[in-house]
Length: 402
Image (cartoon, rainbow, N blue to C red; front, side, top):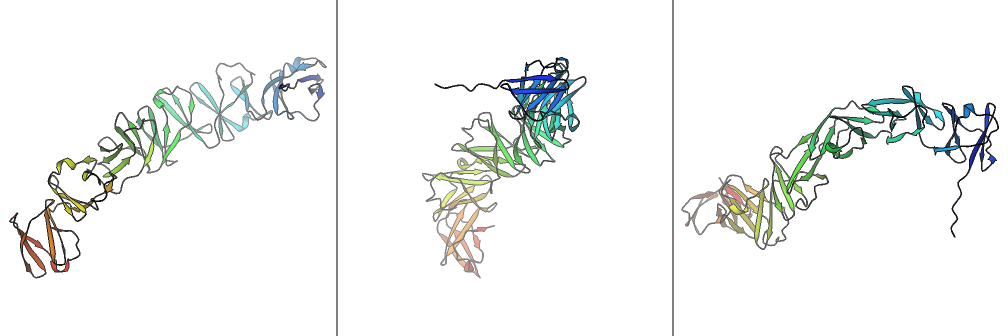
């Protein structure tokens, strides 16, 4: 059988200007802190660490045993309304003078010891009714309150005179606070009820990027107070995406964008390049500035040892996929830009040479030396190329012919 612990019975009686408190009919010795509340007396029984109320104490006759009314645990901050103000109690002491009231539309807040408390139902409650002051912000914490078409940023119970700028992301509001040098999330701001205190979430420090999925396959990208997604381009690679932001000339890797539920924000760093490739079963993807351009390359590719040389006929840019022959795991890798304009590249080793024009390896060449240079004309092109400093360029490295 389990026996329930019986609650202690707290009683009291008045003795002229003094009073006596009993726990289970045994007198409590020593001083008992107290404070007036209209005709009632608020006390703390320190042995039990609880607040009690001695009802109608001022009018009660002496030596009448009455039961004390339990109010709250001793660590609770209490308040009661009086005329146009309030009393605030800590350990049975009134601490009004140490608090700072703040009225925002229909709510009353108070700042005490740099923490913020809500005085619930302040406008409708009667005087001298004890209530718990609801802690809504620990010392130094920032919080926000929506009030009709406006919002307020506070710390403790004080309005912060902050410089800020914001962006909407779906129903959220992202707020960059300059003094904090950080980006804060006001979650579901559009649907938030008025006069409800909410804790913002610090989601990024100064100059850090964050992103969130919106819709089926799009995204929003933010840094500080700026949004960077209106002109962006992106392409999927498996379930991930590579996004390119023209105004930043930067690409970003958005992991698992395809399957993300769009509920969370993620930190992200700009990639080191805007050009990436992947290979699988000897086919490839080539992502440039957020576009997969592999389909337009056509015949303009050729082997260079175990590497693959790619020429884009639309932009005249030549790329190299290093070790393409063996790296067929479909992972994204940075492509080497061999040239941004030249159509022809060459390399030489042991006085042998090879020429690629528009990404395709040329046939046999008629050639002759001219000083340290080599003049070569592929028989299938009938174009004369000058391989400059050929004699000293026998390191098998690709070079361009301008």
